[in-house]
Amino acid sequence: QEELKSSGKNYGQWSYKAMKQLVKLHLRAGKSEEIMRHYKRMLQCIAEGSVSPNAVEKGVNGMLDRISSLLQGISSSKVQNSQQLASEVYGCTVKFFDPKAGTNPNERLWFKTNLKYGQLLYEMNQTSRLQHVLKDLTITGAESNSSSTHQMEIYALQIQLYSRQKD
Image (cartoon, rainbow, N blue to C red; front, side, top):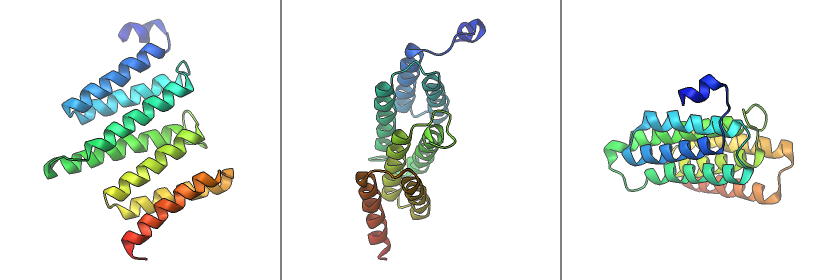
């Protein structure tokens, strides 16, 4: 890795794959700091542009699914750490793919990530954060004239939230 930095070469497809495997490895070991460090490096590899859009979408969605599945079936002592890790990973991803100010703007991936994050927040019963995510999705959807399918997915999440709040 140090040789790569000193030679001035950019990250490539193999760097991306290596970072992805390191994130998976640290997920199994439960090392939150290492997960975040390698996940951010994985995103840097994506920013270099040498990874295909399909590989990016598949890889990011896979990582987010793994992070979300961490929260199912864990003991109550680890819930707080896992929720914090999930929030950090989703927040980092949403910021990275933000269509307006992200490092690597990708509206489709940003929308999907935000929608998954909203569903995760619903499952964690974090309604105030979920309302913020729904607001972002609604505003961006209105500005970009998003598809009716996107609007329906936003409405479905809002209905879930309102039914939980009995509103």
